[in-house]
Amino acid sequence: MSDFSLIETLRYEPEHGFTRLKLHLARLKRSARRLGFVGAAAAEAELNRAVAEAPTPLRVRLTLGREGAIAVTTATFAPLSGDALWRLRIASTRLDSRDRLLRMKTTRRGVYDAARDEFPPADADEVILLNEKGEVCEGTITSIFLDDGSGTLKTPPISCGLLEGVLRTELICQRQARVQRLSATDLKGGRLYVGNSLRGLIRAELAV
Image (cartoon, rainbow, N blue to C red; front, side, top):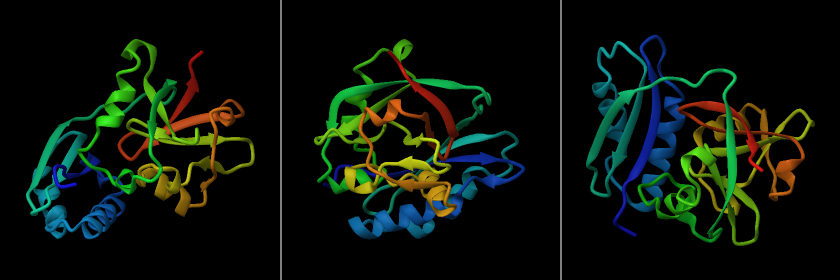
């Protein structure tokens, strides 16, 4: 349980700064506290230092080690087009709902990499993982949202074994989404979205 770091991946725009910064920092500090990591309080200053005078939008990745070591890397970021439609596949790889570390964003990504490797990139833009009970959890890099026509998006509860996504948290707090257990069959009964804090909501469909 000590051979990993905590991660936050943020979007930075020169005109607006970091997207959902408070939620990202809150998640990092909460995870650090639960796992006994130190140094999370220094994250905001390190992020600001990394983007000082950046002229273009960036994808910013911060890692925090158990002893407080922080590393920040940046890359040019290009938003998806508004009409983007991602193709989804469902992996045979399963998540374990009893694994509480799944609720935190870490560098321990073996199960997600295994799920992604089940399909070539040309066949899937994102891959959905279920847990040992067959319940929908999340994508390899996104949260899952279902519009079933009720006016509120449905997203799986954390107890199913999934990351406490920042975009997911924001949508729940804004009452645009609420938690509900979902099966793979449920995903065929409405309009699907995947999303994360970096890219926002993305329209999606299950590939046949």
